Image (tube, rainbow, N blue to C red; front, side):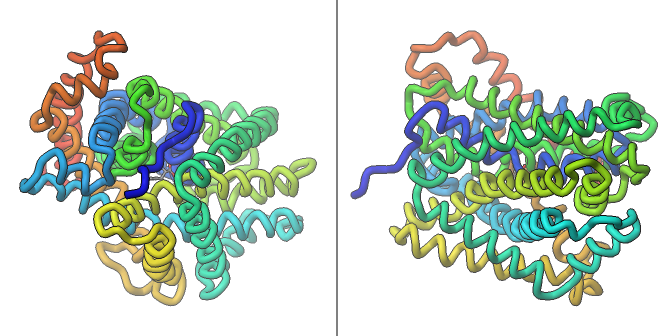
Length: 447
Ligand code: PHE
């Protein structure tokens, strides 16, 4: 049997896990849903979800992954043989397929916008023109599909290269570049004329604007943005060496993810207000408004192209972690070759992605619950499957799993201090499950 791959260095672990968390969720999804849900108050609820639910569940996934050194389904089969707990892994596999299908489409849009911005396509355009360009591009048949397939190809290429030589190597290079690019964008945005209106929108809580549905959306987004609830962090956890401190890794990843989301907000909202664009524009917010903003700035095409490169890079370090959930399962449980299953997995997801892409155009008229297919995948994964997966994970760790394993994993066999065990157990046993169940039942309007 071949030796199991693992992350090579501490920085590599952090870069890969933070790379998974930081993605389109932070830069494309977070600003548009914050814009739709009233701004500052939404941010506060989101931050609460990260602290009381996100951090403990990420640690839980790391514990399950590292203690079993297995994939999302294999881990539960090992810890709880002959019980239905492996359903968590199966749901994770389903979520991975759903998330990656629309993720590839949006990442494809980003790649297209890199080229359009760099080649000055948007010069002299009005806000209305930008809306038309976005709508006609995303609803066209071939172009978005070709970009999506290119993105999925690159994702597959990195995943085939394996953990140390693929995911870790690329994450280590790509993540610092991302941070530098976004800080440059922030400086530019914050020195725009009406920047303070954007700051107000982002940071001034107005609880009248927040609905129960907004709380539900914030919870789902916390799961999406932290890559938890579907076994991604579990799978990455299985590649983490026994000497790493799981708590501090999770804490750092959650902080990095939150900081990047806020930095993205700081780049987008001042600009949105400076140029009179509506913050509740929806999923097209970044694509409709920013190129226009960039074109009205000195060196706009450069800033614009940098921004969309940044989005693509961020998307790539996330998409490889999603595909890895699928690949790890099939290589470990069925002995498939890594290359073969990556090709099969990426192709299968791409086909569903093509349906997502077409649902913005020729298949637009087919809706379920008033959503086109792509919105449905987005909603179903982030707001239903991931929180449900997270709920089951916290119950599993809180009530089922052997406490000895948890302690060993948290304190690396007693080499780390054990002060926070009771806080952790309190969060996974009581706080997270109750909060998720409550928000969930309210969100889907059962209570
Ligand atoms: N967290 C990623 C992002 O913010 C998306 C993702 C979701 C990745 C679920 C893995 C699992 O873009």
